[in-house]
Image (cartoon, rainbow, N blue to C red; front, side, top):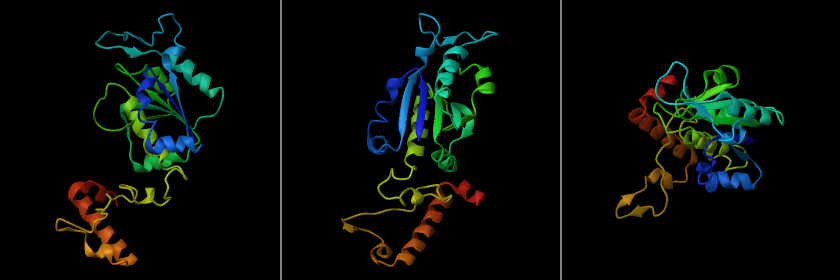
Length: 226
């Protein structure tokens, strides 16, 4: 998979993509993540990427030309499955959407700033709009990093245990059940006996029961979709 991220702050991604699972995925050659500074595609000497909104009002708007020049340059080299704009009013990012994006080959993630991007980009260039929650960030960089991390870990071969992602929260519409590790008894705080029994079927039943119980308590709305 290849992910191209369009941003005016490429340095913001140095931390998220230089450690842990994403770093290992890059080292294995399972994913390529390329950062593109939109200012490099500006048409004036000041590398300007924003301007005042028509009609007046507070804030600035990201201009068409720098963004479109960058997208066109990338599209001239390969076909992209999606050109995604990270925006608070996009469709809410969830596990099914992460699963869907993880089987694509080439993705573009556009990080917005200011009051957003010129609407004509959304009408003619963007193919999908994604939000990571009902709140506003300073820009789309953190949201793009979240989406990239969530998608990359689902690529076959990225995780050491191929079944690990299948037991994550939301994969089956439920939150994950409680998990424990050694020691089995710490200060009198004991691990449930069933997990020490070695009985795979009963352990699986217990985990499902606890997952339903936890979901009912913390996120009952998820059960309404079953």
